[in-house]
Amino acid sequence: MIYFVAFAIVALLAVIVVQIGKLSDLSARIKGEEAVELANNKTQARISVGFMIFFLVVCFYSAYYYRNEMMPYGPLKSASAHGFDIDWLFNITLIISTIVFVITHVLLFWFPYKYRMQDPKKKALFYVDNIKLEMIWTIVPLVTFIILVAMGITQMNRLFRPLTAEDKFIEIEATGYQFAWDLRYPGADNKLGNKDFRLIDPASNSLGIDWNDEASLDDIVLGGTDKIVLPKDTLVRVRITAKDVLHSFFLPHFRVKMDAVPGMPTFFTFRPVKTTKEFKEELRKYPEWNTPSDPNDPTGPKRWETFEYELACAELCGKGHYSMRRVVEIVERDEYDSWLKQQKAFYPEKIRGTVADPWDGKRLFPNEIKARAEELKKDIADYIANTDGTANKVIQLKHVFYESGSAGLNSKLSKYELDNLVELLNKYPNLRVELAGHTDNTGDAAANLTLSKTRADNVMQYLLSKNIAAGRLSANGYGQTQPLDTNDTPEGRKKNRRTELRIISK
Image (cartoon, rainbow, N blue to C red; front, side, top):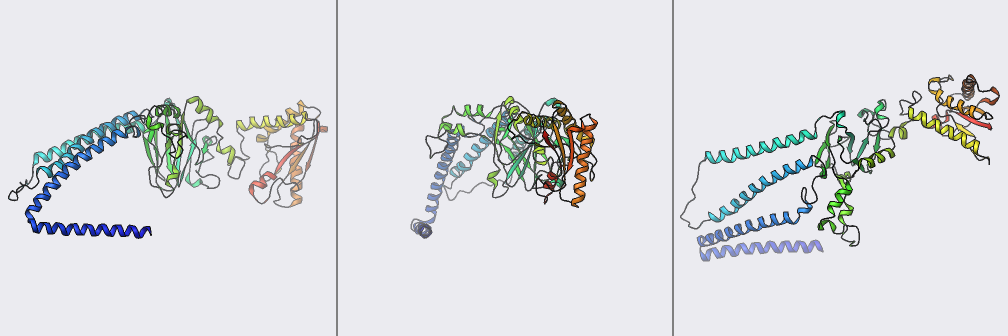
């Protein structure tokens, strides 16, 4: 019914237009076409002048009315150091454009009024050309554009200048894809590791990070919904790339934008100078920002209270383009350092000890050695302190490794765990333990039983070589009979291949 009514209205308007045309033709026949044409010219000329005035008034009034809603005016001044120069350049461009706009607009509508036909016998004067006039309107815009472009290039060079260690910058990486951004932060080494698109695995390594590069091992990866947190008054270098289509990394409040192009890494640098809290306090001073954030909830938070810096994608990258938005939070440097320490590196959380780990069984890192020593010490101390018999009697020796395909102990890697165990056995001289070897179900069950017993024996021999009394130690192999996890996956089989410490008495 609604569509029928709309169609009827359109049809009625068409009929009215046709009838007005017929009335105009009839009027022309009655009054004479020449008189009607003069009257029409006069009317249209006056309408032209009226529209000229109306349009100029609306343009300037709307600019004034919305001045506190538009960058870079009112409270929406730049939140980055270089952005003030960008805003100045923008203002210069706006002033020049406004002057040209007003002159062009006035001439465009004043000329039809001034040169309207008033005497049918008069003819317009036609100029074939005017070299002087053409030179003026060619050279003046050319010189103006050259000056503006030169100033723009100067500002761009500041954003893309090469940085050195003396700049004391932090670097983050943004990878765009449909429809989110993955952010990567450096760890304690303040270095981002290498990436290689050939290493991309949607399940375990969506960014293609090269785990053979030691700089990658403490990198922090934030998913598509996490905030981007950055420190105030610190130079930030943003490395930008994309995995599928063209995206754009746009931080409007910081006056920076760069396309994210698949296969072509780009970057920019900027220095935030206002925290999110400081920017909110500036917005708070303006009545436009003290209106309800939700018009349907007049008692809810104000607009300034819900304000957030944002990352926007400035390319139409697909139907989910809107979800590329990310919140950006600028904080003081000490708050940033505290936040960064709370973030967990991707490698130890998701990769370490899995089939994707190139260092598994080949190397232990200092932080792992230290953390494992504390963990082993706590496990045994908890058992010793427990009096009701509920403490765990079985402790997995996580850092005991064997040579590939054999029972030979990898002393280079295993010595940290076993030396810590020696220290604890010396600390608790009444502690008696069993060393238990286990395997997965790959191969022959009898061979696995022998292998597990031999491995346990080798661990015991290491402890004996460190002067631990033989009467306190025993070694047994259980083969594949006591799995911790399924043997149907590489991860499960890895968990089942283990050496355990079973406390017999304390």
